[in-house]
Image (cartoon, rainbow, N blue to C red):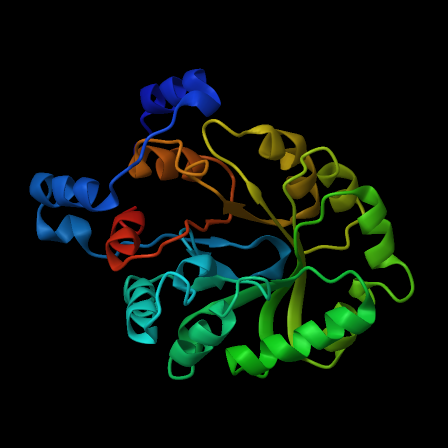
Length: 278
């Protein structure tokens, strides 16, 4: 796997003003023309998700792309998930806040549960409300156990203090973990300034954060602590919200770093196919 450094440097130089309406299908077609069929078959690499010990596909699937707002018919949403599984993706990330994403995923995984790890998240900060969310996740995903449950979008240290205090969300996550309903506990954040302190607490098994060729602050801030504490790293927004031109160069760049898995948001089968040619 080769990383096109020139692409990334150009993207970084243009920064946030580098905005391209990228056509996934066009790039996929070009790569089909350039390569033989064997190049487009799954050759999925797996990596360890930190101290969880889970061996996850280096490319995962973000659950926001299968919601009914973009796929009114469940069949088309299901095809996206089935395609990802067929192409050896074994890590699917969603959240209670992603509309009906958990329900859509649950319907597909009812017959393919043993093929993938499931991660979901809660915005709730109190034990009572987080507990209700966990119950709802188990119901919607149609599972007895969730592999990874995350505190969603932790942005301030005062929130962190709240979730780890008595009556905070962590109390609920640990309770359900003891009950065998959750295996591991993680956190997601868009605030690179708080993450070092949050991760030094050694509470979380995984961390999910934005990382791309033009958005490196999160990774730079936490790369030492995640390595030292063996925390799994889940990368969101690999194309910087659509600001990067090449899917291949973007994914190659990320996978050249010490990260566990990258979860592009895919809302079409073609996008899944392109993202999984790694």
